[in-house]
Length: 147
Image 1 (cartoon, rainbow, N blue to C red):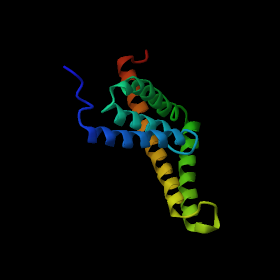
Image 2 (image 1 turned 90 degrees about the vertical axis):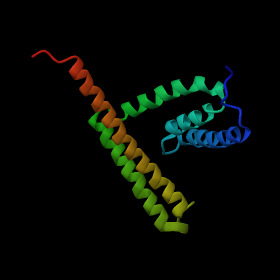
Image 3 (image 1 turned 60 degrees about the vertical axis):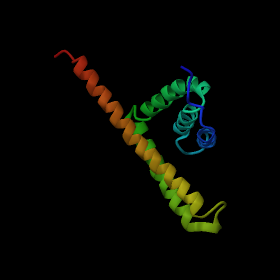
């Protein structure tokens, strides 16, 4: 049976626009503060719903995104620095919003994007920490330490 993912032109166009936008923003956020790799993954997932040729890129990006999430909570120092950076983004966003026209690109559009990036970072840290902790618990049950 043929792949039916691309049968509706409206769905294809919507997936192209939404997935392409997520992908472009994710690529930009790879070098700017924010969850770039996760947005790249989200863009690829949206695009893969209508474009089968994109499927081959989803798994490698997903593996890398999950590895990066796990690496971010691999030590207490990394956790502390990541939390401080997330709180710093929120603080800078509030400051940027309050200062408005007195700073370059000032105002709430820029400030709110910084705040959102900081909150997403903090949320991803909690998710990553819980995921790594659960994996460690599973490993300790599967392979208990000798006493």
